[in-house]
Length: 259
Image (cartoon, one colour):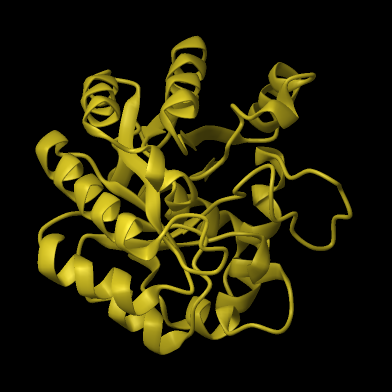
């Protein structure tokens, strides 16, 4: 039993076999998936997918930093409306991305704060994207995010950065495919993160975990990241699966832990 806490199953890369992908994951014990929107159209699509798969797929609504320039009052109003639907369990994904800089920094920061305000208004957790922007995310959370809850999705930082993220009591860290690969600090982070504050995800269709050589990631593959986390922590896979499932259920209000 596992929860894929971040999977973009609504994207066009699943158009030909979306239902088969979902069925394969569920058959393998991936009982629930959270599909976060990256802009208004994908937020609508994630909600539609969640409505078509009640109790299995849940939606997030938000605007990714790459698309932050599309955010305006009308978009915000519709996101707020979408967030009132019972299938929507989070605001996001949103955040800051200074790696590709597809949107100017000041716009990204403004839209980040708008999402924090929306999460507070809707009483929903945040799904936060951070790439090459850790210091700014921490700064803005300290100023505007106190008391909120959420997850730093696909965490990619070091131990010091993880400690800063975990200083926000309501937030968790989520590991994806990069945990299974070499050349990063994630094993050290995985060893130190409190077990009640860790999630696993695929970020499908991106970030295929080792040892797979697939051209597309999918929710079924979240088990490889969970297995690596169990190996790093020196714990049985079943225990890590149970812990990360309980954490996802608690954060996103996904129903019964045993479902």
